[in-house]
Length: 441
Ligand code: SF4
Image 1 (cartoon, protein in one colour):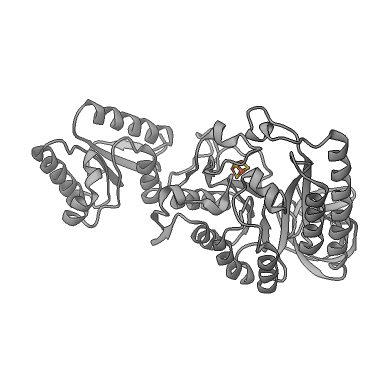
Image 2 (cartoon, rainbow, N blue to C red; image 1 turned 90 degrees about the vertical axis):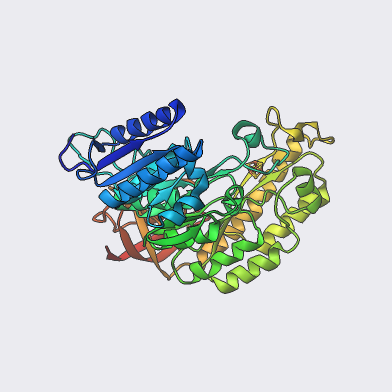
């Protein structure tokens, strides 16, 4: 163990179940490089695993918390008495955190907040940011798992269950670590980013000495504090999406929304059992663009959904022409094993599906090309992804990695991947921009 490892004292009270909880927490502390020490004096913080079974056990636990606070000062409380947090807070308002039994994740979060783990490059096999499959300068930040919706073409809820959000402090601490490790762009992902925190009733958590709600807007405000690009994916057009517009307008959140609309016909959306209401969508898009003129909108659509009539497909094309989205992906509907939509009547013949997909993409290609043309002559900030003999390949705020276009910088051979540059746009096609470098990080 390195001598600079943070040191944790541990008081374990209660029954064998509590003992097993203590063993698990101690194991995790050791795995993460914390030293376990036997005295209050040697510890940087103390975890007290409490019991709340009978009055005498409650009193013993409260006394142990009091002693640890008196002898050490930094105390994290967990275990059965943690279920009665009010009682503990009333007696000892200064404890750092309180969690219930078997809540190892909350204990570790509290330990991380009180004593950030020290990374020793000679001893630790895993970097502080964990193992990443993305380039060093961008990272996906998963904020929840599962989904509360039941879209008829999707089997994700049956595979991953209902929405389970990560508490906001856990997400913000992970984001902080990623940024400290060199990440310049955070890509927020989930099945439904707008629903973030619903399952936790938007519980408040502490981060950087302030209280934050586990909710999309508050999460965005927290991520904005980190001073890097933050991009939102899989946002559903619920009313509270309007709340992030001021952050975008102030340049604190990337002016980019990835909203999978999937269709524009109210009847098809109903058959799809999609969340959100399409009726006022065009109006809302108009308002968003007014508030954030730089806003880039990306979406995905399904054409040829069972029962889609010619008129409904035309309805979709009309929506596309009016909404003038910047980036669009589309798929011809294909049944997924186990999806409810497989039982719907009137499947669209394969040939017709392909024909509609082609028409759809042709309409969108014109729109995308026109929107990119408007950028010619403008100065943009870009993040460099890679450099090769032909120059640099970068992305602007309008381009998510892998799914959107890129900005090619012919004279960018001397730029470094993972740095920002200023460019002037000189050309555009239906997907990508050509640009000249005018300043680098
Ligand atoms: S398509 Fe998305 S919103 Fe619908 S059920 Fe699947 S994961 Fe949830």
